[in-house]
Structures are given as C-alpha cells and as structure tokens.
Length: 255
Image (tube, rainbow, N blue to C red; front, side, top):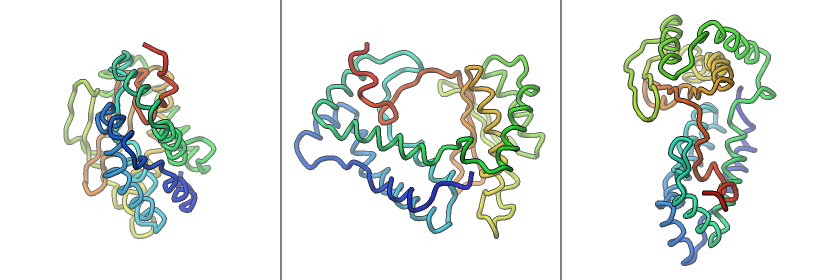
C-alpha cells in the first residue's frame, strides 16, 4: 500500500480537535492522566511534521502510522478486563469536555487513512498478502499460544535472512527485536525501508490476518526510524480498550 493522498492526510491532520482554552480542560485532562495535553503538546506537533515529510516524499506511510499508533493513551482495560474507575473517569470527563469524543472520531478517521486495507493494495501487494496468508497455514499449524507462534515466526524471519537481535517475554507479549538486511534496497529510487516496510510487510499482513482469525494479535515491525533495528510483538488477542481509540460512548454506562 503506497499510502494515502498527501493532501487528504494533511486535511485530516489539521482537523485535530485542540483542547478548549477554558478551565474545564484542566480537571478533565487530570482525570485522564494528562493524556489529552500530552497528545496536543508533544505528539500532535510531531504528527504534523511527519505528515509534511510524507507529502515531501521523505518518509513512508509506515513512518506516519507508527507515530499514530504511539499516541498517548488512557487505558480502559487491563488486557480484556475492564477498569471501572478509569471508564467512569473518561465518561465524566467527556460529559464536561465535548472535544474528548471528537478526538476519538478524529483519531479513527486518521488511522483509517493509514492502515493497510484490501481495497487499497496494489495487485502485487494483494499477491504478497495472499502468499503470506497461505504460508501461515503451514507455518503456524497447531500453534495456539503466543509462545508457540513467536517461535515459528522467528524461524520465518531467519529463513529470509533477518537477524534476530533480542527476544523478550513479558506482560506486553512476546517481543522480537531484529535487523532487516533489505533496509536500503532500492532506497535511491523508492526511499529507505521501502522493501522492508512497503513490500515484505505485505507478507507479514497475511500472517496478521491468519493469526487474528485464531485469536492471536501479531503486531508487525515497528520502531524502526533512525535505527537499524525493528521489533514485533505477539500477544493473545483481547478486547483491549483505550482512549482515544475507544470513544467515551463505548464505555458509558458499563462497569
């Protein structure tokens, strides 16, 4: 997926609902652990910078998406378990500040522009995705836990020349840090990481589709800008909720 139209991306970015300039926001933001102010003051300026760099052809869609997915968040669940106090805090804050719901709507629209979707893939990208999906049937056959999946995933990484640098297991899932040897292939024509992130990742997307159907959440490579290394994570797929991805209306009146 080459990415969204740069001007459309800029228009969506500029629609960000900024915090209101009145006393309501301080109390509401405090309920959310200052997530709104962190979004507005540090995360959003970097988003604008990346949107401009994307329009100038300096970075890829993946670089913008990575930042979008790193938005400061206010967690509403612990895994799939609801956090009642936090859900109540979001509901109360949203009752005082309409912009909190507006940020969720804006974030949904922004992310929808950037995530990979079947209708936005080129013919080659569809072929690569479908190849990954078919390959996953053999690669992950019988694997039913994140631990089993990640062991086989690392075998797949190594089979295409990817170097495994570090592995970690913890509450955030099974994490693999690695170096892609194809980082700069065709960089002079297509940009750095084009092969790794815009083509090889389409095979990974096939893995994502297959594993999601079986309750496993595979977050493919992230955290690559400015580094030779990337990382991916594998976790049990749960109903995790967090603002701004989860709008206040989704948790209002729930425990």
